[in-house]
Length: 98
Image (cartoon, rainbow, N blue to C red; front, side, top):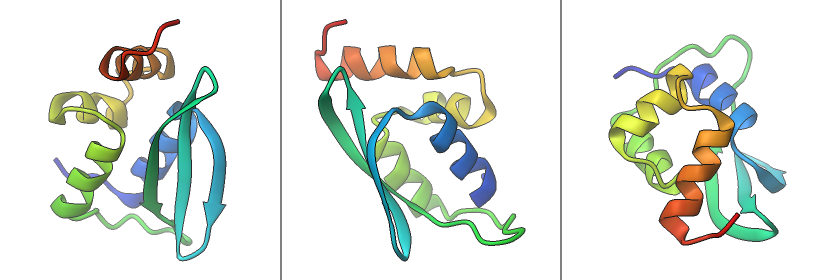
């Protein structure tokens, strides 16, 4: 699956619950659910009309940081996986209660 930098950044910014975000050469953010930091995610900055595709290595790294399987990651990027369903998935994987 080919994913552009812009698609990746948009999906992360609209679906991932951040507690804090730091920018530099790349974006770093803590994923937080119910006041608990679950994971840290690092993703590239998008500049201008950067529509180039991310590498498979970067895709796998970000997928692991988001705690998603390959299939769920595809849904995460292409939009069937909503923010609420993503949070439910993190809760189930990290044994967090609602």
